[in-house]
Amino acid sequence: MKYLTFYEVDSIDELARPDEQELFLDTPALEVFTDLTVAKAPVIESDYNAIDAIQLMQKEHLEMMFVVDEEEHFLGLIREEDLNQQSIIIRQSKGYQRDELSISDFMIERSALKSFDYNEIIDASIRDILYALRKSDLKICLVIDRNEHKIRGIITVKDIAKKLKIPLSISIKSNFDDIYRAING
Image (cartoon, rainbow, N blue to C red; front, top):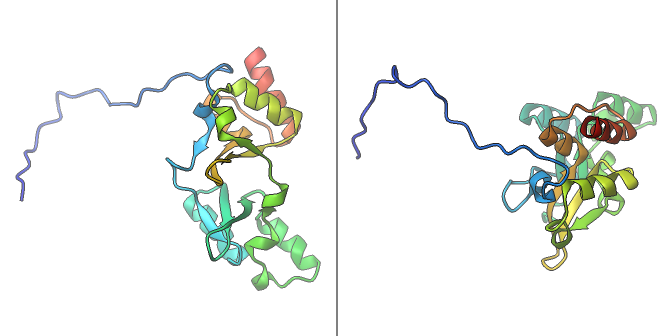
């Protein structure tokens, strides 16, 4: 066993902080990209009970999870905004039983999602990403590695705004308008 020494802290008054670079529209897009080779993707199986999933997402402070099947194949995304008590009540009003609802009843299916190729965003800027998302009215875009046939990551308008330190409204149009207004004055 290694013997560790305790030291007094009374003469230390500075906190260590990570180097944070300020991001701008011309900053490389990789700065706003959640890379799944670095950050572990939060995943949930498609047959997971919807009520339990709401509690899990709240407990883990997750806004979104990747939905997979029992063999870990990607099926889609589930967002906190799509899976909530109101959406459960709407399904119940259509005859569904509350305890029988699963993630697959609320997820955004893979076929409805759009993606950028990782090799293209390597040379792109945040401005390029925002322009493409705005033009397509998208709040979320996957990033795929077409050579490896894998989902490499995700880019969201919410993450871009957070990293640019810009407050956002709720609607898609407002999200983009808020970002451009904040950047362009």
